Length: 254
Length: 332
Image (cartoon, rainbow over all chains, first blue to last red):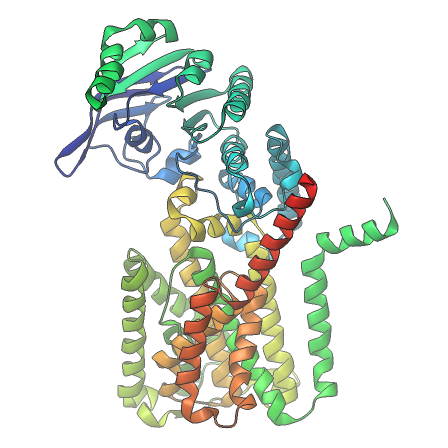
């Protein structure tokens, strides 16, 4: 589905990513883990066009997407959530989720201004889709609230709903459970499993090891801008390089 | 479902349509209630300003950009119509459309270049544009009439109807303003409008949702320039005289103040902002000498306490309070 080869990203002269090679197979839940500063967020930003990689190739279904602008990549069917919430606090929850359907609008500015019957029909369809996605995350009751007043956990769910409502071919989740308590984390884990079962291809960037080990089909480990291991959760857990990356760092800070 | 709920549902579903209809009815009846030409002159000016402010509010409130130069497009529209109808003797309606197309082209070229900037830099660039246009209007005597202005612009006509008295102008100008209002309302209530609201909220997030941010900014900039140009043409035909000082940078700042009073991204607020600032001098006799001072003061106060603008800021507070109240009561 998504294949990265030799992806590098330099900020000025500083390397954030050097030579990352990995792939995200279709229909699977792939987890991307690594210690702080390993380059996980930089990598996801390169995949989604928020940043342009300095070198290497990123192919999505045999199409080169490295360096494309973010909106083009989104229109190809790669949707994402952000590590730090990026909701629109003044818009209602419903409108926030509806923004996830921007690609499906198929509307020009002119047509929107004339509000032809066809367009109203289309708006109703989009609304139904959004309500369905909100139902899935238990947000339907709060649909008219301004997103800014929601509790943190709900905001995270709105971001998830916004990312999946457009039925993406590939879903990139940047730390979807960061800041959630154990109960909420378990709930999100269940929802991710459901999405996976429904056939979504997911790349999950996460710190929470328990969650990753529980639900990931494949785990990729990133350290200092390089991909140091890949495999099933068990394989990765036993990999000496991985242990060193995590434990070594813990000794250094202790 | 009870009758009351049905009514409420009908209202929420069609509230925009209901408001627009009510306002249109009030406007149709207005000249029967108020036939003082002076008052009608004022409300006519509100209509013209409202058209410009609607476009500018889309640009400021829905793409999150700033323009301190919209009086330039207003002026290009006014002088364009004046020159086209008097110097080149075109008939006014086609001239208005032709001028709007030319202004759109100008705005497109300016927009592509200038909208790479943001924040202070964009403000300065648009201010510069306003200076250039104003100076050309002032200095190019042979074409624009220079500092003494351009007189003798013909009135607009329809078969059997000449728009040269306050009442007929009232219907003409407000018909234009209402159509623009409706188009803007439709735009912001569509998927395109949500994309724009996203753009104003967070550019990175908007791009990640599939909004082509650069194209969207340029499109809305061009749209707002076209609305300003139409308003300018109407202004020229309405007063039959234009002078460069109407289109200086102080007009641009006044337009921004109207947007700020109306509130970022509030289409209805745009009408209110235009009305408020147009009527303000009438309410205060001492005002003329201190006009800029008071306008500046309003701008500073609103931006300090309600950065989203007066109307939007207040409705935001109410919406948040309401939601919090509901949340606490749902929990209890």
